[in-house]
Amino acid sequence: MSTTPLVHQLKPIDHASAQGKSKEILDLALKQVGFIPNMYANMANAPAVLSTYLHGYSLFRSESGLKPAEQEVVFLAVSQVNGCKYCTAAHSMIAEKMSGVPADVLKAIRAQTAIPDAKLATLYATTVAMVKSHGQPSPETVKTFLDAGYKEADLMYIVLAIAVKTLSNFSNHLFATQVDERFAAYKVD
Image (cartoon, rainbow, N blue to C red; front, side, top):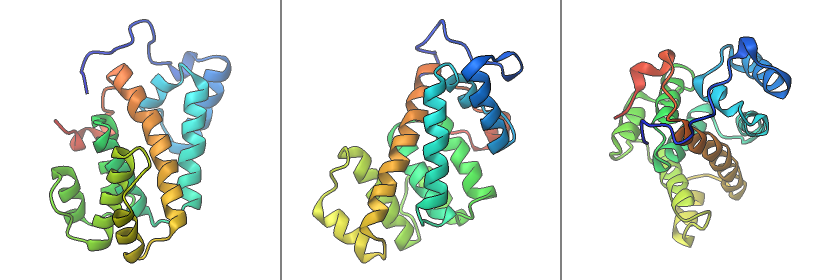
């Protein structure tokens, strides 16, 4: 991701001085996560983008049926394929501190080396294939996914995760979003 913003007139929306729909959606974001990440302050320039992101993210978390560690693997896979260093850092922190991703799995994902858990490796590979193929994984990929114990409906929830991560990944690319201090230990080059 470029370190130079591609947008020049849009600036992060300061929650304290936000008004209208930007204020409403930032209030909701603050209530949901307890702080306003830099990504959200940028996305609030188009309140519908942040609203869609928060809604879809919440539904993926609450309805996918995937365990928190599995959800994080999906988010990391999408963010890596899309080249979003901000989301890779943020989800690495969430993976370690909140979602229970095993340390060796997180290390392998971040290094893009073999993942030592077969089921999570299959989930990661399937998500990568879904992003790279624009939602058209090979029949072999789908068979391997199902053989690992996942369901066809899980593929639809991966689509949801891809959608919300693409909103955030692409927004971060436009703004060259700086990694928040709480994610700084997880920055990637």
